[in-house]
Length: 217
Length: 86
Image 1 (cartoon, each protein chain N blue to C red):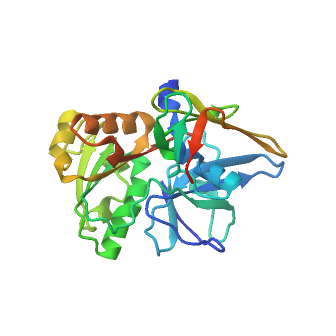
Image 2 (image 1 turned 60 degrees about the vertical axis):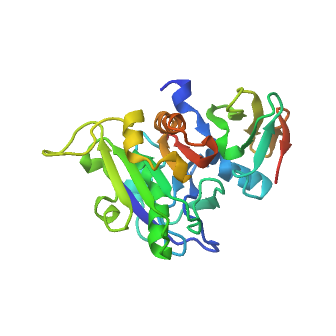
């Protein structure tokens, strides 16, 4: 896992939740392109957090090889649906699976930055405590964070220790009657499970914005 | 992974659509030509690990958009979409 700060010429700024595409071109002309969510809030330096995927074509370069001053091709910002602008008063429920937390982190940082009073709660599913991205910072943003660790828990762990299910969602999610906005990001299986569970709790499907991450790196 | 686990959504092709059409389209509603469901492109099912990109209705699985890129040009098939709101 690595966070990169990008300096993009003529970058017009971004919205919390958007992503960008990175395109690498080999000397023989072969191109590989991947999408990465923007982790920084609007108005801040442009940051992406990249998870290194085994056998990936792009992420190993971005995590292991790229250095200060290196250049690569970037396209974006991308997305006008999976975004939160911070001026809506409704409670916001963020649901993250693994590295799906990255665009949600931009929203949490943005909320702190603009002083939004919209209640924000993050339900964050990770395999182990070591896999939790932004561990320290998450506690400083004024966002209520609920972790679940699905594979291994530290000694004395009193939090959730299972995959997200309907009971867990019922305990953590705002009541549907409060009209919360929801952002779910993670693997396809994670996103569909969380979104379907929230609909069973009475959430309006239109209020649930989802982004499925591919496992190509 | 199964096909169901590999399907993405319209967010994944936002960059491609931006490059082809010059505007942000993931928030643009589209009406399915088969069942009439109206959803933003971000809410459609997207298959990227086939030759080209296939975008399907999340309700009836109708193929709404296919995009095939060649070295010089790109083919966009919109037969399965009855309306796109920009």
